[in-house]
Length: 82
Image (tube, rainbow, N blue to C red; front, side, top):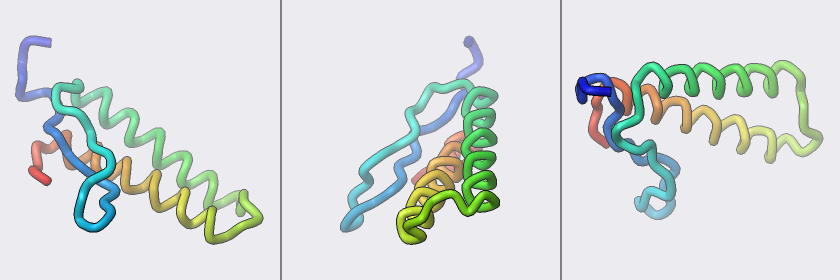
């Protein structure tokens, strides 16, 4: 890809004591990042609709983490700094 304006920026997420544990990497084509964000949100929707896990705390944690991942991908695609 030649146009650097069409790639993601670094976007940390999932912090512990204000230290990011994970991040979206810079340089991923935006189209790919947004496609992955869409997939992650489909997983969130499926889990929430299916009432999939017996342990509701675990289910909420999984849904929260997937949502944070998707949000970070969208922010990284819009060039928003952390």
